[in-house]
Length: 249
Image (cartoon, rainbow, N blue to C red; front, side, top):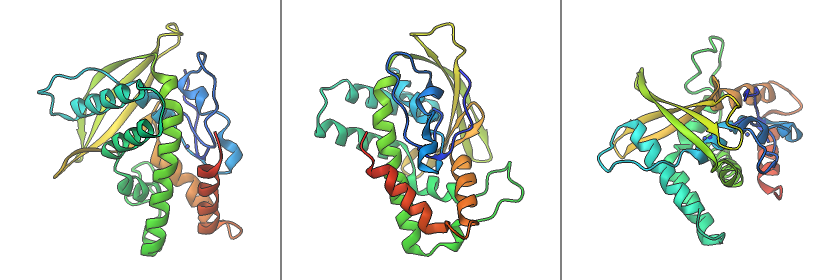
């Protein structure tokens, strides 16, 4: 892709999130992998990304709905990760993730455009950025998602995924899944929903919701606090994101 924690961006996450995901081979619950992310000062849920890795299930060729899209993309990523480790393999993983996630919309949502429906007093931080700033934070979020996803993919291969269907929510399709650890079969499953949009080029993911916690909403909560702190603001957000990207695993 167990009790999902309320994650954040710093060391974020499709599970839990925020600073850099911790490593606990063979014993992790999706939420455990994301614990300890507070070190970066920005926190965000990568729980979804942890479970994402486990969603590798064979899909019939005729599956063209949103759920079929989720299954197909994860099947491709799973097959790629089972190859020997190499720069070429990492590049293929990046390409697979790029085909799966709409980083542009994810960045907009993370800065309040559109605002999450649960935030009636939400403000559009994105509208206050110039074009250069928008490109900068979008690229940084893309790099951080890639890095965190690659690190957690291998740790979630031993999860069984149950697909619970999909439903339309004002033009966005919610694909519902549950991830069950094979190593700890008595632990409760982790629910991860994928918000998918239909575009001219096909389906694309715009958000991940782990145990009811939206990735982009958690980003937004952290970004908004920093934007309203006179000692932090936009420069601090950029600095923290770069710090997390540069940090060696």
